[in-house]
Image 1 (cartoon, rainbow, N blue to C red):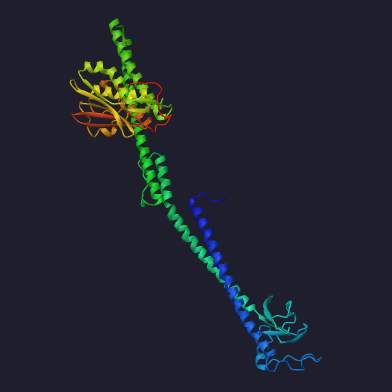
Image 2 (cartoon, rainbow, N blue to C red; image 1 turned 60 degrees about the vertical axis):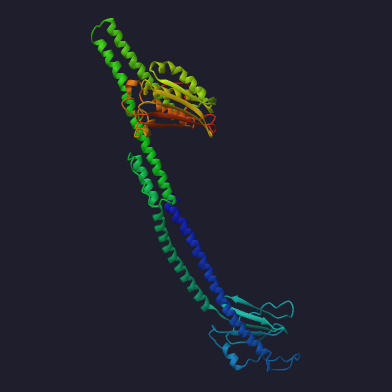
Length: 481
């Protein structure tokens, strides 16, 4: 089966390519060497053919009657030149000469008996060539009159040398291949080592060690960028798990308080007989606890729906200024009762949004401002358009929020100080819901505050770019104080 690991795949492809390159190089080198040897032998043989041609048409020429007479002349080769063909071991040079009619004219003593005349040309034109017969290499030429001169010799030595050369090439190529595979394995192992570190780190994180991170040595490499991205993901996962753990603990704590109140009041009423007024007081305390428990569960359900992206926003064209004016009008009696002045600087701010959800954000922010602004203070509502954003802001002259609390102000169950405690009736989920609604609109909910001077909450909604059915929206309005 083909290995599935990246290291083995790299090694196999590297080995295949290296083997292909070495094989091609060895074959090309061997063929070049063989061609060079063959050319050298052919040049040597053609030189000997020219020796025979000079002897045939030299000053003395053949000995015997002139051409045209019945008697055949004898081929004469000077002794000095004939000596090179007189080796009887079969490994030296030999020659054969044929007449114009194809009959054999002369041959050397070492010439094989099976030497045949080469194919004659179609016309009486000069022709020369080479041929190989087993262990023999032969060169021949046809003279203009029609004689054929052939010189050959054994190339067994050259073939043996070529075989030895081929074995050396194969051995060297095999050695280079082995070294290349070893080096390739080392490179592949070194290159994939970060992958193994990533895998082991991810496994430890999966086992619960959320603080583990991948060591990054080369930030600009592909694996370095991958490790950095994974570390950022792991950090977000750790923060998400920590947030989830805090949320679970806080939710359990918040749910336990009203449940404990209801249980304690009921048990108190059941211990002995009491008068009607006492029973009524006990039931009122249970109802208050139940209402608080109901508000808390509704808020948790709302946040769960946002987290699950279960519903779509009811989008439509609306005006932030108009929504803010209608929402503030409902709370003007409460502001007058607490001696807090409401001022308006509301310009048209058209945008595409869910008017009910936006009204919930404005109502929550305005209610929080009323809760934390002392008597004689002022709350200012503003709206308008900046570039491609519809803007709404609400500013108060309350106690303000410390800078250390601002980063976590929109966290669930988070309270910045003692003035934002359970006595105001809230569980610390109102701003978290507002942030979830803003995120569903691809909007930004921001806060700026100076301790002792007040706070400003700003909602920025893109005029365009909101999807027709963005995720994470509620079907009904709810208020969490």
